[in-house]
Amino acid sequence: MLKTGGAFVIASSCFQRLWARDLAQSDALSPVVDSVTELPLLKLRKGFTYRSFSWAGDTMADGSATPGRHDGMAAFSRGDDRMVLLRNHEQVVGSKIGGESVPTYDDFVIPAGTEGLPDGFPGFGGGVTAVSYSPDATPVTVPLLAGTANNCAGGPTTWGTWLTCEEIVLRTSGVGAKDHGYVFEVPMDGRASGRPIVEMGLYRHEAAALDPKTGIVYLTEDNSRYSGFYRFLPKNRQRKYGALEEGGSLEIMRVRGTPNADLRSPSTGDSFEVEWVSVKEPDHDPESFDSDAFGGDVVGTGRSGPYIQGENAGAARFARGEGAWSHGDSIYWVDTAGGAAGAGVIWTYKPADSRLNAFYVSPSEAVADAPDNITIHNNGLVLACEDGGGLMTESGEVARGTRLLAVNKHGQLIEVGENNVMIEKAMTDRPSINPGDYRRVEWAGATFSPDGTTLFVNIQTPGITFAITGPWESLAAEQSPT
Image (cartoon, rainbow, N blue to C red; front, side):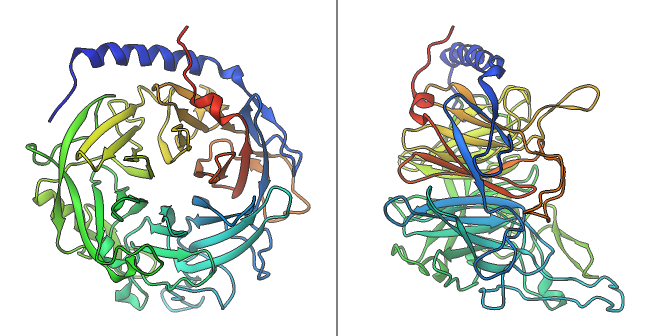
């Protein structure tokens, strides 16, 4: 274990002052009206504007309804100002996404009225949609993959596909369905095979980050206090759709010289030399199973199969792995419950020197509360989606919604946006959207357009995608402390 010395203490103290200054400037955020609905759905910094689109319930191109629980997402260019967003939907149970022509991994259903299960099981409602987007046109949403479960985050490839990750472990093959807890590759043209990349492991997947230099895929695990950090070495490293489906080998991170290092509570600046150990059986059963509505012991609990193997080989332990993104020479990824305050850590891993660094550690929930999905601007600005439920008053009122937070290259934390979604009355053009206060709901799926002008991001419930534009360069610039 390698840690910095006294210089870090001084730097940390400086960063704490910077954080306190930034977060004291709560008036930097103010309500901004959505150009589409004319509702003040977001609070943003001066100079930023936005539009909402592809709400849950909106009609997709095939006539079916846009699914809800918008989550992980990536933006791909189609030339000029046209883009395609590939977007996850973190649903387990529900109607199948899209119509019969949509590629489907698991079409298992139990009809209502079945003995022992009077309500039946309508199917696995998770999957992926694509949104064709242009600033001057009406966005069009199409379904790409159905029959998956709890599609949380994922990650883009350099050849224009999306890796969608199931954040669940189900051995439902024992009741006539297929197993869940895998990663799937999804192209934007609707040709998804629906085949899981089993050798990426059976565990509560969160995100995937592809190293464009090596073709290695880095993977996070969101499994409470027993989470590992993994990498997948593909057999076929051609940059094309389907190559990853040919399989490969799975490995888990270990701190060199410190078996079973507990990295759940680092400090900003901590640095570790790491290595990788093999997970020989990536599809191994988890520690235990619980019963559920299927009537059998199929819901994976406790340590995952890959984690158990890694633990036996001395793998490092994290709190709850979440978002991941590749940028420059590093893989950025989040431990959303890490740090002494349990409020979140942003790690960077540099493959070239096998070093893991604690880039940012939240000192408290008031400063940054459970960063989740993460993305990086071309200018190096790190943008994180808060998932801590906002700030409540003693009387139980919402004092602050969840936020979009940025960390610039100087370590300064900046509030970019705040969830201000309050639907006070029924929306005549969106009858499936229930009135309510959604300000405590998480942000998800942050991703910049390839040219860096637009941030696309979701509010998971009621299910809204936003395009936010503004002076991103000014946030990345150095700001002198006061």
